[in-house]
Amino acid sequence: MPFPYSSRRSFLKQVSAASALALAAPAVSAPAMAEDNYVANSPIQKKMDATRAQRMAWWHKAKFGMFIHWGLYSIIGHAEWAKEQEGIPLLQYELLAKHFHPKPNAARDWARLAKRAGQKYMVMTTKHHEGFCNWDTKLTDYNAMAQGPGRDLVREYVEAAREEGLRVGFYYSLMDWHHPDGARCKTDEAARKRFVAYTHGLIRELMTNYGKIDVLWYDVDWPLTPEQWESDKMNQMVMDLQPEIIINNRNGLPGDFSTPEQHIQASEVGRAWESCMTLNDSWGFNRYDDAWKTPKTIVNNLATCARGGGNYLLNIGPEPDGSIPPETLTILDKVGEWLDTNAAAIYETDRGNLSPTNNINLTRRGNTLYILQQFWPGHTPAAEWLDFFKPESAVTLAGLKPKALSARLLKTNQKVNFTQDEFSLRLTGLPIQAPDDPATVIVVECDGEPVVDQWSLVPLWPRYKVGISV
Image (cartoon, rainbow, N blue to C red):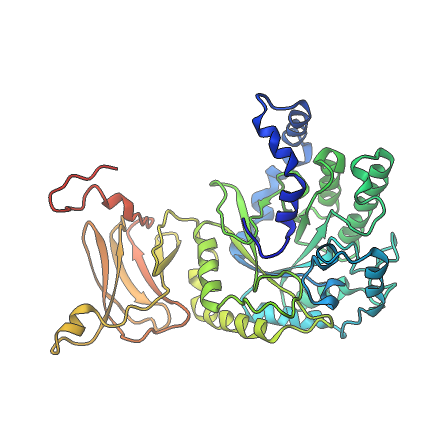
């Protein structure tokens, strides 16, 4: 998918472009088959399968989390890939570590915002691709305790999240631009062993020193295969130290959940997934990026994830001192206000067979359907054409299969009149002005699991006596 700048996904596409030629080969190569077998036969993956439902129960209910990208790149203010995109020499980039001086306990502001925004968990970058460790590691002095901050920023984050009752997640980039073996390990076996030992050691610290951790979010496994990373041992170590943790799929093993990036794509039924997205177009702080998503877009994305049984991990990029950009505060506070009223339409909802429209998004819990009207219809045509018609608004939903039993506005609990036939549910007598913003939710109780499928109507709809086949 196109991005205005290189991201972790576009990077992987670039470095693997040459291997795409292999698609023309008549058979799968032996190394690819061996790698597939390594992943398929992972003992820890099989053990994780047995406990996944219990470990992920809270996560499925939560739906909404905060991603935080914060590191030395924040000082430059050109997003998180500045070092590579702008060709900054390593020794010059290292100087940033001496000038990284966050204000005390900046993470408290992040956690308080996350709670106001209705987010139930947080995932912070402990180490991004730049290799700088935001905690007090004993394995390198390229860390927050030994450099400018002079303190453990990961510990501050963990404590802040717990104070607000939020679940704690750690992001960790396997790729490392700073470590001397970070790229050399691809072709040098001795370097690979050193770098893998270093990587496992850092992850062990993170899983040992901060109490219970809820999410481990790997990123970018370039340049090694899962077998070369010893990902099976990696995950076994993590599960031994944190038996209740959930792990994503970016160290080459399937883990517990998939991670579509900058787009929403539901996994197959039974597979957990989480869409991670930026609030503007950048992960790390970018002082020039003004492409902010609106509260309406965020609410719609959140509902789309919930409709598909997934979660929405929305990123913020704090400023160098940890301050939250004003636009971030405004947008997320608005989303939080909406969730204060409309929580039932998002949290603890179930995956559904629900087809949205340009104006309507849909979620469900059991037999309850939530209609999220994005663009309020205002006057009905009759109200505009007939002076004597009482001004009102109406919403129509085509293709609802079960019988509707009742309807009401979630914001006001006002009863909504409706009629239903084989083609549509028509909700009438609604106010002219939208009762809520950025979306109004109408709650419809049904006599069975709600299914909305407009396309199923095509063969039934009379079109000037012309037969329709699909």
